[in-house]
Image (cartoon, rainbow, N blue to C red):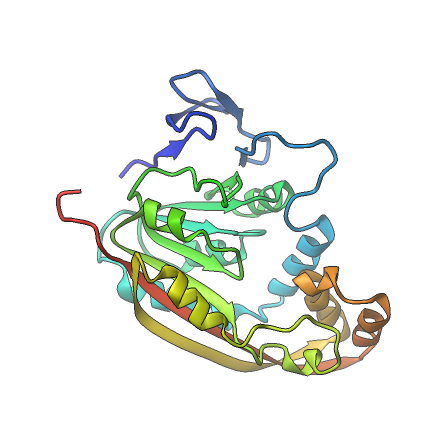
Length: 282
């Protein structure tokens, strides 16, 4: 199945040419040296969208320590157990960051697929494309459009990222899968007790299920919990990579990072949905 990308200006199909993407209306988008494509419009000079370089640097360092490897393994197992056997597919990671989870999925999933990662951060796409050259990474505003064709995605993953339910429904194929990962309320609880990290809302899972209910059925749920033994460096990377990095006071952050080591609970909920409501003829 060919991958259909859409022009962010006119929504016509984008065709790949050497070093550019071009639509029939002659809108063109350069393929960056690293291999990603920037499809954002009306960018303001100097404005940083999405995660900063520092957050991405800390996240890559932390994830390469394999602290979240049990989560990436669980994502792969859940996807593999529900994807149609033997079929070529399109897999989209919305809010892919520096590409860790999609890269792990590509490495572990034994099938021919088009892998696409999408994030609003240009720096995230640059880092991801450098490390995972066989994956297409796009810079795009996922609140506006996912820029893929209708009913073209067989597996959409969304890990700790904003969710555009209407666009998820539009791009998901008939019987397509949507895998959403959210933190449990007790995730990193030992650090939250110190007041250094922002709280996780108690009803987050219920809100996600309700948000998707119009177009998706919940078909599987898994809760993953395990302890992490973090060095001082790993603890600093963990704090720096989270949204709390923008909200934690310097004093609180220095206090957390000053610890020699820490045992911290990792706790995640994986919610697997299947697209419903599409007729056989579509």
